[in-house]
Image (cartoon, rainbow, N blue to C red; front, top):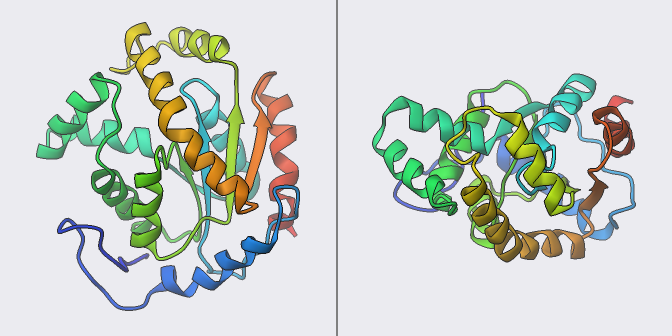
Length: 231
């Protein structure tokens, strides 16, 4: 099981070198690659993280399920973790609920702690972090806590009109699935997510996916990115 390695606030405890740190050198190899380059194949047990970015309704979760099935990743959805925390009735939950209803981003240290706990509870070493980071503050908090950068960053690029239509049609009962909140989320995405996308693009880690089409058509654009992992 994964163990904690660092702290971004008083919410986190300190510990010595773990598998998170041991995988850090693997991430640095990415600095010399472009977004069109093949991904580094991790050795068995080396931490391998993929960030999955895109606006609400861009199809991130659906594609993550396909990646899990094909390549054996563990799917960690930031949104699902936050909604689960809300349902638990914890002190965090009430703060998260009011923040999400306003279409704002939950404080980084809260989300990072939930993601880290989920990763620690898994015996897998390959993770899809879905819907995170949503801001530069998120990114820096994750990298400081985990002690490494992601190997791959997927960005599902989808027209705003299509995203709004998908969210309104999915009818999953989410507190943020209404037109007013969707518009706020899209505004925040435009303001805060693009710096993250540009950052990883400059580091040669970003893979931009055209997220228009059927689920299978879109996945055929994703599959080649992870093909080295099946060798």
